[in-house]
Length: 113
Image (cartoon, rainbow, N blue to C red; front, side, top):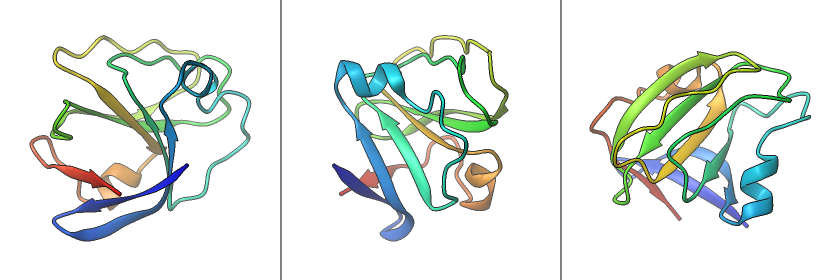
């Protein structure tokens, strides 16, 4: 199921994959060669990620249950484990540099529809 992402009622991502079951979360972006700039992967529930098996750097945006951004981790390279985020419930994975391009900041709320 594809979602769209909004910040302040403004469309920021055209396509967000909803990885809301074990298999989709487990596979994530592993083994993909790339991802479109206007695309993201939303992992729910999730408060910790790894980039093993990935082929490109990503930005990760960790949110709480209300979709408020708690942490933005930019340019995470392949083969890393990121720390668990307290109160984290969702992680949005983006191409490296996209979080800054979208103007995302800690405390912002992202809506998914």
